Length: 118
Image (cartoon, rainbow, N blue to C red; front, side, top):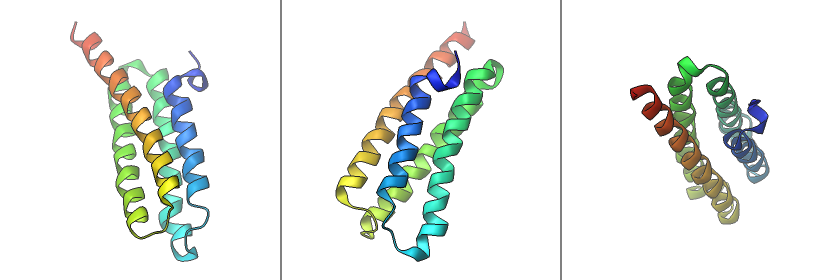
């Protein structure tokens, strides 16, 4: 299956787009550093998912990298919320998308591990 048809890839894309929308009004001093890092991590998650789909022998590694980047986004977006750089609504939408993507990636990872243990 092509990566752009994968549900996890589309969830990651939605997350990346929501991060861009939710962080448009952050102060300039963090927009080009902190926010840019968040956006790059979100795009890296999409890449990890695409590679996990293409390279079955390295799937577990790519899925674990995607989950790691996803956890980093969760921590950083919470800090931005606590500093009032992102609205409560924007935060809620990002976290909801993050949770949906986490469930998909964990499910895929567990299924891959089960298959490899057979």
